[in-house]
Image (tube, rainbow, N blue to C red):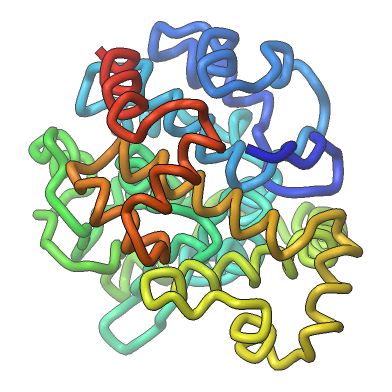
Length: 341
């Protein structure tokens, strides 16, 4: 793989120091989780650290792999308190009600994780859907679970009332379905789009944590951080998003991707160079990242993975994979399976 972007104070997603107490509440050492994710063990001791989407997902996968309990997301959310909230979540807690809190959170959620929130207000109440940004691979179940549970937690903390979701959808039922449903207050339904809904009364129930003065302090700082994030990370992410859609069809030439982004090929390549990378490097890193993901989390054959990555022949995929890793795809799959036991 190519070099990761350096950890910086103004780039990417937050790994708040509050994670330390949450991880400890699960009986884990945060140093062990960070080491498993390939991140510095002292990372959560540093102030204002930001990580890339890839590093964030590596951390989430490492945390998930460190626990055996299917109900871990429920216990993780139950252990959350205002002190463990990141600034965007704490600012949302200062809102007058859940509808305003969800709207504010949707604006600044990209500061917390590679997730976008879609907030729909209607006569029956409020619906919040979760979309993982197209520049990232599929998220671990831990993230899917904690996003849904976390919104309910926010509503309860703000109102000091045992708010229940009126409807929850997930792409698949969690193993600890009963524990999830007991916390959420309603059955989980299958839908490709994860979402949480609330009835009108709970959507507008006053937050006792409402604090307009605190919001006015937070909001300018959050806007600046969001502008920094969008200004430094967006173009390469947009390129990856187009590639993910185009890889299976093979439409991944410089001209193909530049046209999708409404740019000339020369301007497109210059924009990537300005971010310290190249089209060839982005394609190679994305293919390797996706190959590792498919081998580690699916039972897809090498020929099927080769197709999804845009290789015309399986042999071409084997040669490329060996250049990337020094291993065959099957050898890496077996190695990943052993490390997860």
